[in-house]
Length: 70
Image 1: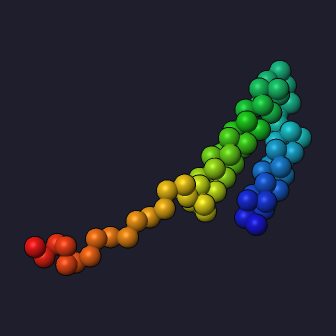
Image 2 (image 1 turned 30 degrees about the vertical axis):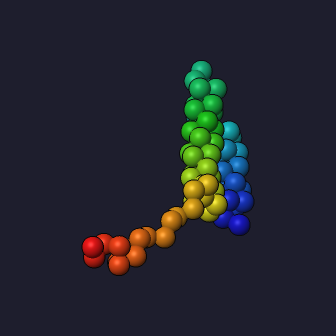
């Protein structure tokens, strides 16, 4: 459930950055920069989290100690 909780937090941060961005001629720049950085961080975290949750490569069992005693 942590992916969905993170998504709710990201949406809340995006809405906050939309309404709380400083007024002026650079408002669009502030909004887009904040929203893009929050979404990029979330995507990076979610992909890393999900890749560790279901890895594509399974760990292999180590060689037994008998093999190393030769």
